[in-house]
Length: 158
Image (cartoon, rainbow, N blue to C red; front, side, top):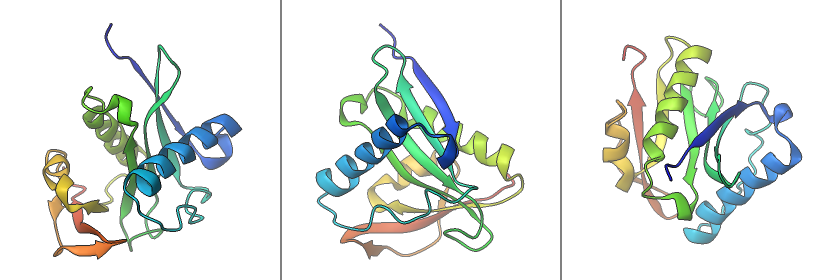
């Protein structure tokens, strides 16, 4: 059976209680528990009226398979949109949803904030993944919560 993902883009106020719970659970499971990284996961950026939450649900099981959030310019970076909290549930890794997740995010960015560059703080080991989506490294490696990160930029001209 082919994996079918139902992509949903919502503001914080549009999220149901269950969707919010599933998104936060996935983020905590991946970034706090799996990566043993203790940091303030709830940073108030989720509730900004311009933030878009992209959720990918498995159409067969209705389980949240992938998630990310899009932050308007000037929330994380001056004059740039940001994509963050990119997460795939462990049981869905290697099943080909990471690239469709990013393509959907880039499409939403272009629709919502046309002609604005996108800047991300990426875990360094994911540089080649983000390169495939037009991001280029723009910083030296730095540690964020003891994990090597780099800043990457995708020009709005792509």
